Amino acid sequence: MERDIIFAGNWKMNKVIKEALDLVNGLKRELLDIEGCKIVIAPPYTALTCINDVLLDTDIALSAQNMFGEDSGAYTGEISPAMLKDTGCEYAIIGHSERRKYFKENEEIINSKIKLALANELRAIFCIGETLSEREENKTMDIIQTQLLGGLKDISSQDMSNVIVAYEPVWAIGTGMNATPAQAEEVHAFIRGKLTELYGVETAESTTILYGGSVKSENIEELMSEIDIDGALVGGASLTIAHFSEIVKKGLNTKLQRR
Ligand code: PGA
Image (cartoon, rainbow, N blue to C red):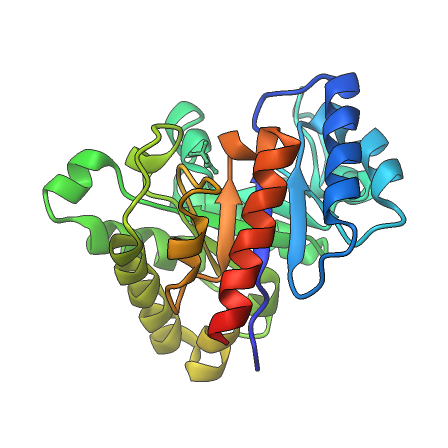
């Protein structure tokens, strides 16, 4: 079974509604005829509903950047998975390194969020990655293993069809310093190996593993040439129509040529 190729744009805390609509209308024009991959955009919560209206006649899917780990209740300021479904979201990014760093999300929180997302029929884009000091101390694979196993605790093989793993080295996020294709492939292959141990070859081979961290149109082709890199989670470069569309087109082309 061939796994999904996915290009996801994480807009982070950017774009008021008018700006968000301009961006999504532009992407819609540029990416309307693209076939062979899934395109996902993750705008801020405030723009989800109106963007969903624009996307209704397209295959571009909507994602949240986060969600709260409870179904409902007295959690002032939080957003539940059902609320996200209600806005049209099909995906939720979970465990992004900025959530881990600024909001102290640990493996336990991330694991419960992934389970709750799946229970609410949201696909989880589950992010993992090491910091620069962890890489320098040769702890990359240990960290990846801890985050992967912690986040996927008690997640069944069947549920894995709705989990997308995103490897995002923290030192590459927003820094302009992307992992080299070889560095990224080494970790992607390690992740797929761990998934094989956990779930068997079939599930591991059908799980999409994205790379994220300073992805640009200039480096997407070399990254997508790697066998275990199935797409990208793009931050900064997803904020402009031209950059994100070029990443999708070039990245998809490269991958389809390799298959
Ligand atoms: P970046 O962000 O592309 O701006 O490095 C990636 C991410 O945080 O998902």
